[in-house]
Image 1 (cartoon, rainbow, N blue to C red):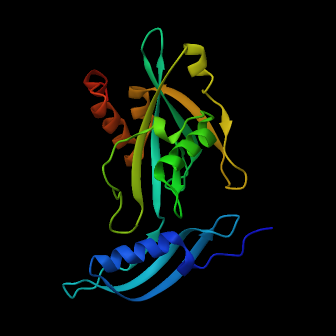
Image 2: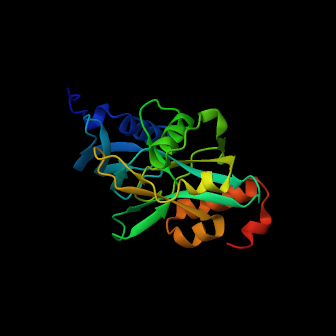
Image 3: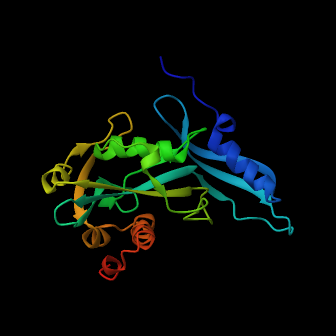
Length: 226
């Protein structure tokens, strides 16, 4: 049986956003919801809100808010155990930004009391079919980063994982049909070198993740190729 529809006020992402606003001195006068998208189980996934709020300085803050909550994005690096060549596994799907087939690192929403690392490990399994645990992942940003502070509360957690495999094992991840019908996903996994991935990716989070990973592992030679 489906869960009863969660109200906006009950949603963890809404309550967290509101608490952060108030902690930073904002006075919220009114909130109008223009649209709410829910998961199949009734939980709030996204919401378009109009917010009437005053800043501590006495100004009105721009009112449009796309409530998304936090998300985790993961760079999965598969290393050829014979040649040491590095490959990443991307997911290809159509996105509403322009309707094109986009290439992205695996990612997923961090909801309720979920640990970002647990979400990251689960999404890697669901989106590309690689089984990993949260303790195998390395976090790349020390605190939440916000890609679009002017219009959205979305906060990003970035991770990476490295796995050594044979070339045949690596290429087994290429062009796998993934995705969830319940979430309206049509996803195909794609294997590419890091420089190739940098040409395919058009979202800022994905491009930043490439640089964060290469900087962390001190692979400056590959970074020069981006």
